[in-house]
Image 1 (tube, rainbow, N blue to C red):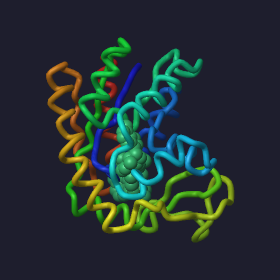
Image 2: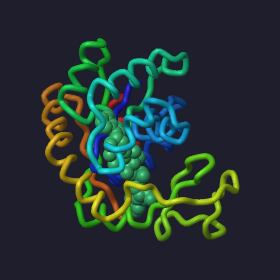
Image 3: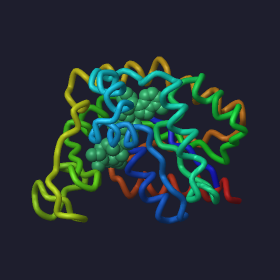
Image 4: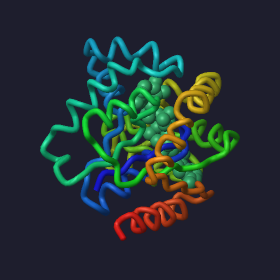
Length: 213
Ligand code: AP5
Ligand code: MG
């Protein structure tokens, strides 16, 4: 099964992709996470991406298309995958078409901008394993310490209020048109993001089960 999660920054793509990945045993591929890994490793790609990401802009299409092409040929993608945060422009979506990759379902998680701002302000990540938490909605057992690996929690550099605003603008201008693009292909599954993470998960699973038939 080939799935895609669309949605504004902080809509819950990564949170839901993690659950869906475990349930259906397919990898969740986040271009944002791959770029942050490259940044942490100080690679040429990471250095190129940093200024775009820190400012809330999109990394150029050719760069992210290259990353995705490389990732999707890996063995673990044979039985399907979840794309989280790719494509983000019509040009990226067309590149997937050119690769002959047909999505079975595109789940669009809908959340209002003011809720997004609250969510991203409270998000924390494990600096070691990358697990994602929230100070109110998904707290760790011990404050500041990852439940999974004991690593220290950090705040993402692009979760500053002024950068969140730019990311939302970019989403509305460049990524939201993809909803029409995939609706026209008959694969769009809108999911209204709920206050509680598990309630959004239930709606997401129901949408995916409707695709599986
Ligand atoms: P990326 O890492 O993809 O960031 P994003 O799209 O801005 O989305 P986020 O990861 O911030 O949010 P999410 O939807 O995954 O939400 P999450 O589950 O964490 O990209 C970062 C940057 O990389 C981009 O800005 C761009 O520069 C670059 N980039 C990446 N892909 C690119 C591409 N294809 N082309 C060009 N550039 C690209 O949830 C957020 C928080 O809310 C969490 O703390 C969570 O616990 C909490 N939460 C989740 N669900 C709920 C709920 N239902 N109720 C309450 N809290 C919730
Ligand atoms: Mg994410």
